[in-house]
Image 1 (cartoon, rainbow, N blue to C red):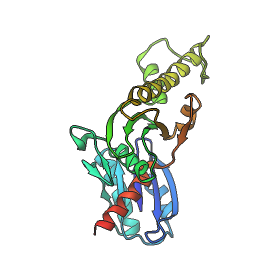
Image 2 (cartoon, rainbow, N blue to C red; image 1 turned 90 degrees about the horizontal axis):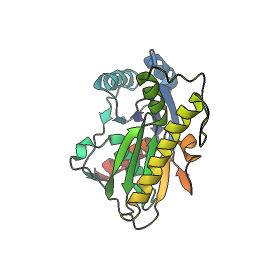
Image 3 (cartoon, rainbow, N blue to C red; image 1 turned 135 degrees about the vertical axis):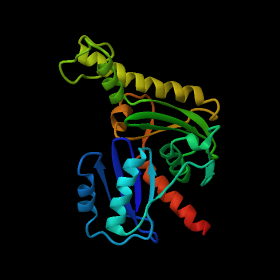
Image 4 (cartoon, one colour; image 1 turned 180 degrees about the horizontal axis):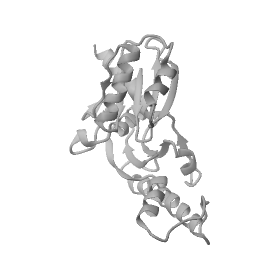
Length: 249
């Protein structure tokens, strides 16, 4: 079993070790009664030989999921922590352990899929960007609030910015709702464009931009040029990690 504990929700997948296919997969939002939601989703599933997880949440929620997994499958999750190097990917952080494990696993999946020189973008609660060479060298990255978090932060920190409803993305707004929505989404798009442009020289030219995350489809519509949509990069990275560990044994 593979577990991706993100800021907004948990993703899971059951993988067949022999065929390397996913037998089942699902998601669950962080909310009261999550244990019951997972128990229902996992009822009747086949026994698992290993549970591997990646987490960017607090230890309390990790412990909550570990209890649930142990109760249902009789296994204790092993949490992957960010290494300096694994699977052909070399962490570019001066302190490797401080790179989010979700970002490292997304790079591991991209490298295993032979994406070549690429800019990896994750867009959800946070907006993350990482530059990865075809040879697996991580050149560093950026973190910013995701577009929706930008909007919530703006509304929470201002007294008079109060949209009357959801806004649209436009080039120049004539109302507050559109101004807030456009400003936040276009800021995210501009950051992706700037990072890709600035990293192009170090990547040997224009690199593939690959985007994953809950808000990926909305952001892709705002970006010029070809962009590749990725899905479940962290789970795929966990699968690559599991195979690497198994092969090492």
